[in-house]
Image 1 (tube, rainbow, N blue to C red):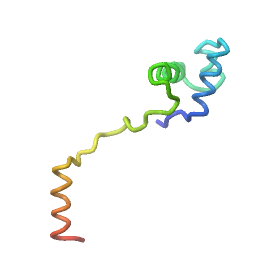
Image 2: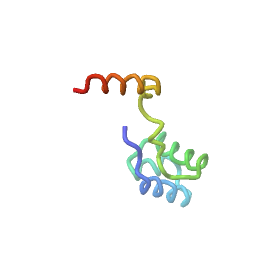
Image 3: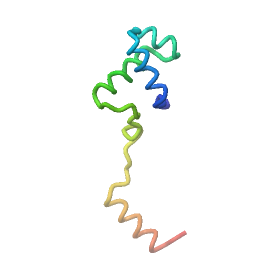
Image 4: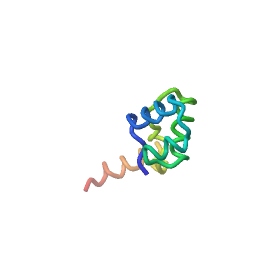
Length: 79
């Protein structure tokens, strides 16, 4: 799932500013009610419209120790 672009996030907040309900905003922009509510909540918590995409996805299994080991192995036998 992709993050909602900042321009659309701003449009969501603008519609809220015009006293539109969450359902109305979702219907107008074609998003789910939960997504619209989450954009507003995240803006209130963080004060930013930028999505937090760096928190998504799987955590890397390449720890600093494994990185050192990998570099040593590649130095011994570069392909």
